[in-house]
Length: 300
Image (tube, rainbow, N blue to C red):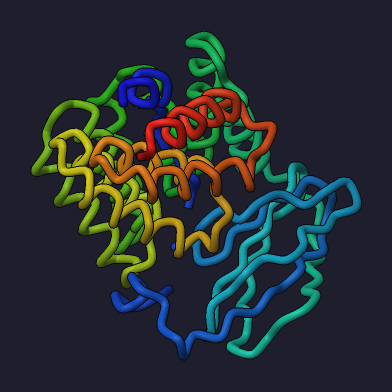
């Protein structure tokens, strides 16, 4: 089935960025899922365990975030405000209100501008502008690890892999264990065809995050996909989906493509339909619908 292979080639970026043990690869029956709602400033970005879980709406609310049992770390940032970090208790659920305080810190404001510019960049000029904002922030505060990681991401998008690796090294100097930096390093190595180094960096990211690092699992899945080991790729994509609590449609697309390439049309259809469930108007939706129709037509 060549249609899906030709149409659906996509790279996964993180998110940015994650505390489960290695046993979190398969959620056990003892895990009691719960949900929380974050209430803060409008358009605030929310991370839980260093994984971006969404953005609050115009009213400052991000609803129905699924959490596993145990404690978690919450981080919230909105443009023009000082970032806030707080723990989520093991039994905490329902509404969590986070009050942010306005800031005049130039390094923080430049970093926020750089993050917004990188996420919205669609061409080389815009990416260069984002890189310059990161550099200005780092000139004021050289030890800001997330700025080094953000700059590494944008340099990778600009095909400056040597510069991206330098920024990963600089980020790692700001803290001894940095799962996101290791995951970005893995992406750099994969992009440059250094497969073993990529797997090593992704596995280090997973170890540093005590098993919970969906960007790294997606990265390993992409490496297996490159090698034609589609069943192994599917396993890694499934882990990432579980860790992100079913919130990233694009990984379902990747999972569907992996199953499709392995000849498992039943699982491919299920994964693609999950993509359509989560992103019925997504950019890939028309192509995914065509693939699903074709796979169903080929069934005996």
